[in-house]
Image (cartoon, rainbow, N blue to C red):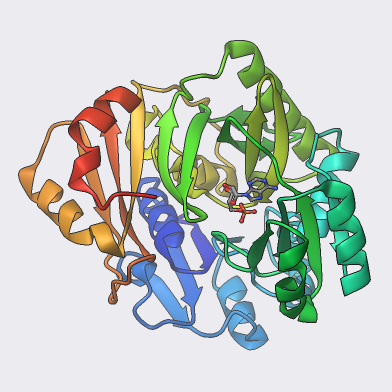
Length: 368
Ligand code: AMP
């Protein structure tokens, strides 16, 4: 019998989950507050409603065989009331933990992962004391609702502390600044019964707090580091009984890696898997949700993924029109383009970092 996957959120991640589900013969129903959300064009049914609309969320669950989320900030306490009665297969724990930076980093440390020093900051005195302890620069982040560098402030010296005070109207954490060599992420799918699969690890390059490029395999990473990073990620899932999909972002310093954050949903740094791997993060999430056996992914060839923000949309459209071999342009069909809004991505299969910089970099707006 055809199964229906309910997806909370209908942004680009929801769109790609819905496409993967359709290819596996499943139906999808998405819930999102915006009437023209990207996934609404491809899912079978949709509900336009706020993420805190309990009746609408319940309707989504009622009409679905299994429910997932592509958006992290669904109020956890609302989902809690539904989790007992409906099949939210990943559970709500990874979602709730990922919604609070203090909670997620504490979980990471308890699970044996290394983290940059961090502290809960509720007042100015604690901020001053901890900034003195961690040294400058350090980073103040809101505990909740932060993404892509939003809700954070770099504190370069004591002189910045006064300006940071306005952030303290909400609970924050202070983090030691990590002078990382590069950033990397591990995306895993599974649970204790199914076992876990892991996608090849790439190097992630951010610009202005937003992912710009993923280069896979990560050029400087040796096999031992890659193995340890994957093993620790799996252990983190096991120890916390996290099920389904989990993306963990790390800072790499020499031979060591520091947990930065986690996301219990498909991840921007895993877009490359659609064409770059033998199976992709969306497909494996759907296979997990549909109780199908997981498939271990393999990288087909070195791959580069370039995020397309509003300022690069016209360039992406030109590249799409040129129909180059092994260049896959994804445009999400968002109605309004803005400079820092994620409008699409391009995956270059069979290309390494040097090839990208030589041939493609100057087609896009220069990153700082
Ligand atoms: P986040 O929203 O926490 O992922 O932060 C966005 C980006 O800011 C990260 O991908 C890093 O490039 C940078 N960043 C965040 N926290 C730190 C840190 N503690 N040390 C150095 N860079 C950081």
